[in-house]
Image 1 (tube, rainbow, N blue to C red):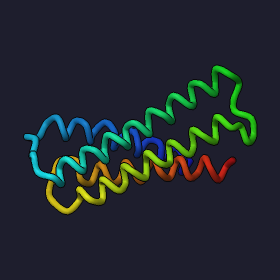
Image 2: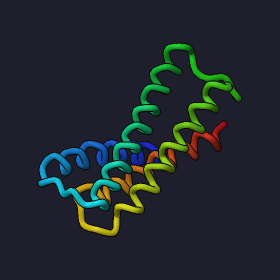
Image 3: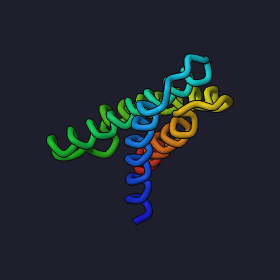
Amino acid sequence: MALNLVYIAIAFVLVFGWFEWARQPQRRDACSLLALVGYVLGTVSLLMVVASVVYAQRVGGFAFGDPLWLRIIRLGSAISCGGLIFAVLGVWRRSALRWYALGFSLGTLFFWLGAAVGE
């Protein structure tokens, strides 16, 4: 039940963050661009999650210790960490995505860490 709430929260942050970014006038300062990069990296990480789930369902799931799954986990974790670093750097000035980027990157990083622990 709690895990489903996390997935709903991540989806909420994804959708509303992009709506917020499109709705507000775009600032061109360094902090807003850093937050945008962090949010984009979080989005890429989430797309990797979705693609991995679809692929796993097509092939019947990943075996325990599957090298492909372990590479996906490492890459997804690295992308989420990068997003988190950019989000933290971009949180210091007001922008449309500063809190969304931080929450989104943390959410995807927690997913990948959970996947690694489950492996």
